[in-house]
Image (cartoon, rainbow, N blue to C red):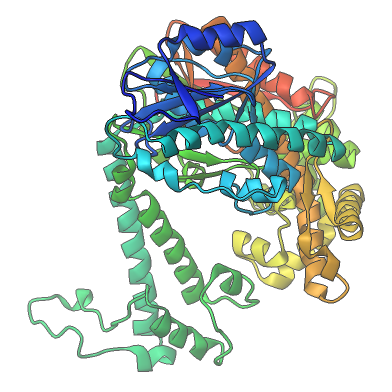
Length: 638
């Protein structure tokens, strides 16, 4: 039965529902039946929890659904159920409803089953529609309409019968989905993974809810600098065209004939570097008409890249940076003056994506990050990130003795690897007082990062490979990163793998597993699965085999790292909520978790945050190899 609590009642009675007079009626039912699983939902006037309002709150089980008109009734008294860790709250897209509930009542939801996330876990993060109107046909063979949802946007007066029934269905369908999904998750051995996602979504919701402040003036200064860099890059390209006879046909001597402009400021080039057609025409003069695209995937795989191509690739990178994080970034501030980004969970690798705006793509350069601040001087940032997280994952997976020893002993892994890869070349590049060859108390070399110019160059090459392992770095990408030729990059990668055969063998094992089984997993205990739908065509198309192999090599690394960060977020949120400490989650980017804390508690929290991060790491890297570094600062920083 559907019960509706509202002072505004329809004049015509309905057999579909009945009105109740007090919220105690709902509490009596919940107290008497003590359900272990209840559904929760909200209907709102829009998607923005800051400026839009909740108009309907729904709670109930399959037998009875309760509709509360939140225009007239507060929902604070439901805290005992919504925060109870013994009662599972079933929601569709829990993050959305939680933020509206928290804004209206301060209630911090706990222990949820999110049908949208469950679907993504079951399907390995595959990009499939996951709205309730898509999940109902997929799992229940039932078609439903969400058209009534829009009727709440500007609704006035009593709820219509259609709205009331719709509100009740938003409880019934998730509960039925839950009943179907639980055994599916168990059968696929994904119950633990799903539980992690459900708990993590509340931490991501807290980050979205809390937001992060921006120093507008500082941000605009950084945007101006990016624009200057962009203009400098454009000038560099124009100069190449203007001064090289090879490009004579693209010069425009009639462009600027102004007597008042100094000769050294006159440009004889008239090219729009953002226009595909003229740029492609110029580049095809270099490559004899072979190029069909200006994408990074095409330009990045060219064996020969002259200065003009390299300058253009830099220009495109700066242009994207300015378009995304220039003055337009400030348009994304909400009415409270903060950035409230949006996280999407369960990508194929297990990582999360980020949008509106994408905070994960903000350069690690602190000149950008330092623009995010605490305007209240009594609060500071306390940020913690894993030290060489993916390298520790690789070392653990490969059981490579060199890597593990270097990480355990606090040596600089990239330098240690470079010394083995380059041998005599590394030894000969050592300067006097080289920190790498400095003797320690045990009589051996300390193997620290040094300032020797030759070592810096060699170390950069190996460092790029070390980190590139997690992303399936090709010789083309390495060539672009180091500014060396593709054959040189190919030879460096080959030498690297000859030096570290266990790493090559481990990556090859993952690649073979994915090609053989059609899926790959992350490390225990989560064992998240990434499926390869094209696997059935692997014998028909050789390119599919390569795609699956690359994805199978990097998913255990990226996915296990993502699982670790999500678990850290869960532990951090649980501690903040349980101990009621003056701390808020405000951001997470890759292997870093960012909080703000009251200055009087910051030092204590720094130590506790480090402990929670490392505790999460031990769940996956059980030998304690992975450590966290935590810092207190006045602004957000890498």
